[in-house]
Amino acid sequence: MTKNFNFEYILGLIILFLSIFSLIYVLSKVDLFQHSKNNLTLESSFFDIGALSVGADVKVRGVKVGEVVSISLDSDTYLALVTTSYENNILIPKDSIFKIAESGFTAPPYIEIELGASKEFFIDKDSTKNNVDAISLEEIINNFIFN
Picture 1 (cartoon, rainbow, N blue to C red):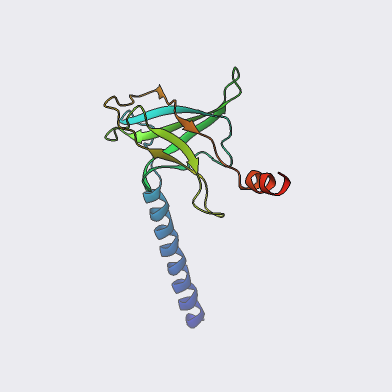
Picture 2 (picture 1 turned 90 degrees about the horizontal axis):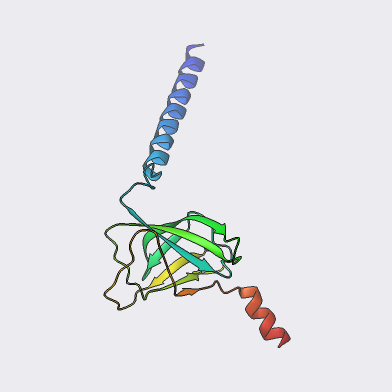
């Protein structure tokens, strides 16, 4: 009886420690204040966003500088409106190019920013103008085969 009790007791402690460790790990990865006033938000319009989703990365030269906060459809133009959020210390020139890119077949798409040379920078709630839509691999293959 005591041998069985010790085994169950130790197993219970292991499960308890793993649960606490998992909870701490998840809480460390979740940003509870991601929509704070210290963020810069920009809105971009795209004809085709492909498989881009909320939470996708926004990168400059491969370094994550922000994320996609929301995706909606403009009822007037029927363009996809993508709202992105950045830390305030990021200065993005107004002539920068925002394009939806993929880093492979299995990797999720992200927004790549090619920085421009303008001395004017985006401010909070601005709209971007130089936007490049997602390129579908299926569309490229169909154009190659059937054209």
